[in-house]
Length: 615
Image (tube, rainbow, N blue to C red; front, side):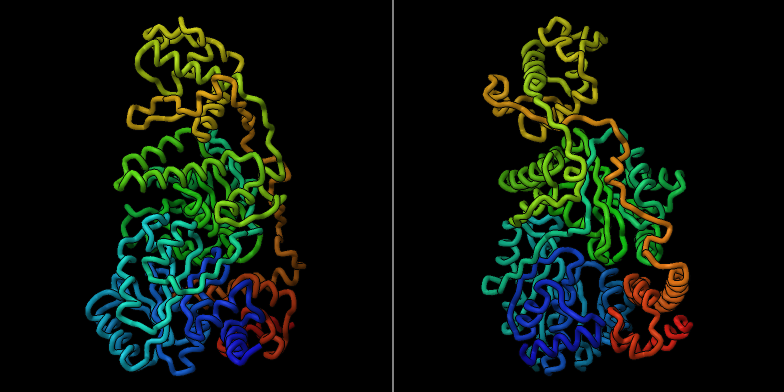
């Protein structure tokens, strides 16, 4: 190992308290602190931050100046700077939460060369005043590195496009010779190419880590009664756990949070329509409290580093696989078992397709969005391993995981060709008979032979398909229709009152050239016993004395965190406290060998920890 690697390893151990790098971390770090540009794709919880924080420290020690970190969120800046401060690394941020005097003080630190890292938003970075300061640093060779976090925001093809990120193309133009590292957890090939072009990273080394999160169990349920299904999921598998529930609309967020509270769960709402003070208070509570459920729109999540989120639930369909992957990736960042659970139905598909059709953009852009949605629908309707499907989307090949819902409880598959032909024929005959199309409910009424007022009004009881599907239930027909829509055999015209249309693919099914095999509908609201995460009263596996010690350690940690206005996990992760309770170190030397306790934390908290651990 070369001298630079030893420096990185020393910082990893002494500053951050870890004994070894994970995955490609060391390769990325060595490349960057030696002046190379990089694009880093690493899953949520994979340790992206260290990939620029350690090079920043190394380069600062070599007299190369300050690293500028471009970050999109105030809360993320605050927590990351707080974590660095606790670890003994001089860092600061500039954002709108500060007073003018506080901002000036940080700027003076920057100009005096005291900061190892400075976090800024892209809007702040591109102001004439800040650019002038950066140019002054550049002239004096005191500008070390640019780290662009959440780099997918630069791409219009990404799932979280932010126009202000486009301005970051000025970095290589105005600050030549300053290395750049762009980092993201999710980017398909087209998004990756856009990041490279927009940030002029054509010569950068691309580091792509595995997207696999083996500790996360993926499961998808057909939407029968979303609230009851969600409640059953939480109560059977995640009672008293921290989790996130994603909803599509602000109204649904508030209604779901209120309903969960009524059911005795500790839940809060979060969406962009709430007052900023309320949003901030709710986010801080989520980060700092145990066992709290955040019910949110996609406005919540980016930069949420809480390590012990045990589940992420979607009660509505996300926009695409990138969004689904990033949102579910907020579970289990600590590496312990976690759940990604989703329920969806036909209306979710209709809503997403309507939003695409009504969105602003070229037809090429909309077609790209439709393709991304189709890939997510294929994942949701999959009858084979979901993890294999998910990883394949990111061009990563794998084998069946044995841990997702389809692996644990293989779904029943049936030959639905005749039923599909009946449904398609019914859509065709209704349209021919009435010269207009109808929605799902009416179609199913005709298939099941229901002689209601609407069927009578349009004379659809005279159709040859009337009553053909009487042996199947409403929910079974909805399942068939949903899967035919998901596979592109039927189209829902959201702009024409959700009417049903046949696509070109329907022709082969109707002629019998294409056989249709579908997932059988299930009525169960609760998973099979194999799906339930095994949890005991003492899920850490500690004996009674160690469990009592852990409780005391957590209470002490909470007090320290509150005093410093930081989330508890920034002081110490749960895994560090569990190791302390297990091993009961009795000296500072023994404490220094615990993962997560670096030199600064040992100096700051060592004596207090030994008092708690003293037997």
